Image (cartoon, rainbow, N blue to C red; front, side, top):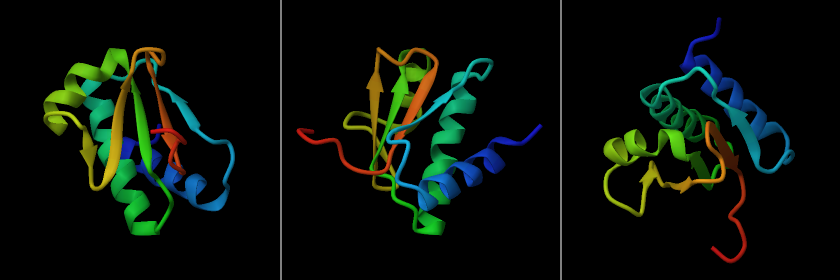
Length: 103
């Protein structure tokens, strides 16, 4: 099974190579909130290394408490990428290459 840092590298490659799907959604059933926080950081770092576009990460409510604890007070961000808590996502995250209009 792939490690989370390897998954992050793969996700950054997808974000770099194709503008679709937008957003890129990832279901994270079976992962702990700490693992998801690690994955968020790893994806941002991998995108930065590759020059892949990443403007926003929306995080499901199941993972919210750990993300807030790790990334600090709102507005949440890591490495210049905005992180948004989204109650509609549950155990899922969305990676947005491009800014969402109106936000």
